Amino acid sequence: MYQVICGHSFMPVKLVTFLQIFLIAVSLGLFVMAALTFTRRRQAPQSGLLFLAMCAEAFYCFGYAQEMAQTTLAGAVFWLHVEYIGIPWIPMLWVLIVRRHFGLRGRAVLLSIIPVIVAIAEWTNGMHGLYDRSMTLVQRGPFWVVEVHRGPIAWLNLAFLYGSLFYGTVLCLSRIRASSGLARLQSIFFASSCIPPLIGYLIYFVGWSPWGLDLAPLALCLTVALVYVAVFRLEWFHLVPTVRSLVFKSIRDAVLAIDLQQRLVDFNPAANALFPWLSESRLGLELSKIFPEHSGFLKTFSTSDSVKELTLLVNGEEQHFELRVFPLNRGAQHLGWAVIVSNITAQIELVRQLQYHAVTDSLTEIANRRAFDAALERECVRASRYHSHFAVMLIDVDHFKTINDGSGHAMGDQVLHLVARRITHCLRSTDLPGRFGGDEFAILLPETTLHEASQLADRIRDEVGIAAAEIGEQGIRVTLSVGLTVYTPEDPADARELLEQADQALYSAKSDGRNRVGVWSGLSIRAKTLL
Image (cartoon, rainbow, N blue to C red; front, side):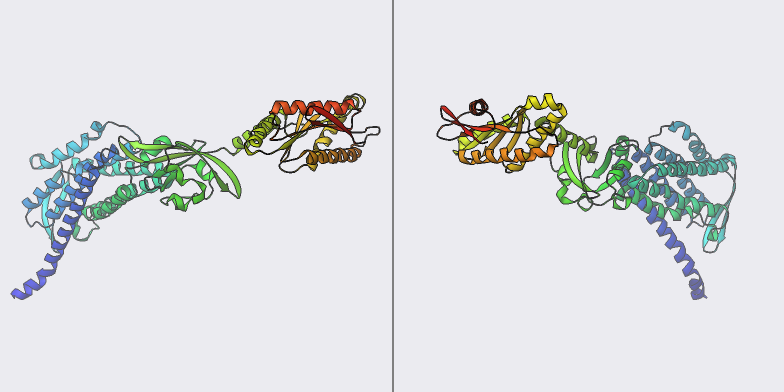
């Protein structure tokens, strides 16, 4: 008979003990989570509230682990009191956590009125019966379960519980729709953490739970897992609250949130528009897997420069960007970076155009006087340093005023454009043609001797004479007068002197009848007739 009784009682006792140990383990997990959360209280104000909520759930879970193992009503009631150290405060703390995480403020004192009433009513229920009208301990299967007939305050607590959890969940869901990236994942996991115990208690409340057990404490194991993922894996208290204060969806510039491991934490819609390859599936990836290494994006975080320019290929086109990096700090703790990316391709192109027009003659599209003078100064310095030689040529269009007066300024402009085009056609890539002013042109010829420069002058005159037929105006004949000088290491001269020499050579060519090349040679000028 003894063996038969033991055989029938072993499994029930084992089941009760197993569930008791399981719930104790869950409560210990909640206490550990609470302790870890407490260590992060300086990173976010709501971490202190989460610490209290985890402690409240731990008391609830631990008290129920002991209640379900009791075989006397007095023992069960004692552990019920332990449970109610935490139960009344859970819904209030949940609402406060959610509101503060999303930057909402409210008076915690008002929310604490009902929990205070519930806690006092439950602990003093034997004096008035307003919380539970009656309590009975009955055996159901292997468990002894407390059956209660709820009083008005118990119903008030139940309404407050479901109302608070429903409000907090709706608030999370509304913000989830308005958020993106890692922030959305964080809110989803945290909002989901209250659902398992909520469903568990609902099943118990309608009488569908096995043996009449309260399933909410059992479901808290899922809460532990979900909160762990939200807080410690997705860093619910770590970076995004700070980022959300800086980044808002209407900002025009692209904004990227980067953590200390140089992983992409979040980005705004403007970033997605600027970099089409960004997507939520790339959140958590290192920047080296998102942006090409040669782009210089990673170097942004290894230098002390707060502003950096880089070039990336976007849709096969070269685009220029300006990166402004802002450290994200909470107190003395460095959390990551907010990177504001601006597409400055249009500005860069505008600067290039301005630079081009600053050194280019708009009519002839060759160097203007300022650019030519600067190049001549540099060439004088270079030739002096390396003992090399170069030639300078001044060219004047013969009888240009007659062309302007007889055929109009439009025809004069056409002639100037033709001369510039034919000059450029005759030159090397190292030579620099420039419009010196009016109908006068200048050419800088590095590493060129007097003989080579003279031959080039002949060719230019021939090319212009032949091309003049392209103008299509009868009676117009285009000829050039050329003044030529050469810089030599044996007889060095500065830029001003070289231009005076070439100008005097040009004057000599024009005085001798035009359509000639005047060559400066020492103190004398000789003119070469090239009709």
